[in-house]
Length: 164
Image (tube, rainbow, N blue to C red; front, top):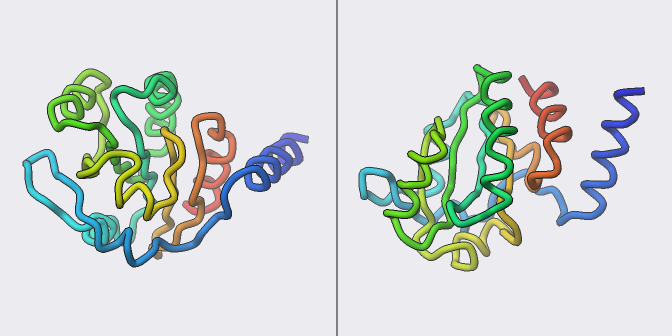
C-alpha cells in the first residue's frame, strides 16, 4: 500500500510539473555562480566536484518563505542520508543576504549563489519557476530527478532510496 501511494504521488507530481530531464543544458553548465569565498565557478565544475556522489541540489533563497518552511525537512533528509552530498544554489539578490541565510538556517553543504537571481540566465537555463527546487543527481552524473518542490519530499526520499 505504501509503495502504491508513493507511485501515485510520483505520477501526480511528474504529470503536473515540467518534464523531467536527465541532463543539464549546455547553457546551464557554462554559467558561473559565486562561491562563499567570492570567486566565480562554472556550474559544470560544481557538478564535477560531485562526481561519484549521489547529490541533492536545493535551489533556494533566504527571502523565500517556502524555502524556510522546508528547512526542517531538508535537515531530516540530510540526517537520514549521510552518504549523500548536498549543494545549495541561492537565488538571493545580494551576497550578504545569502551568507546570512546560510548562517541563520545552519545549512550544511556546498554553497553557491546565482549572479543574476531567480529570473536570470542561470535560472532560465535550469527552467527555474519556483523555489525551493530540488534536483537529484546519481553517482554517474545523471539527473534522476530534475524538478521537485517543497511538497515533493516523499518523491525525493523514494528517489534517494533507489539511487544509493
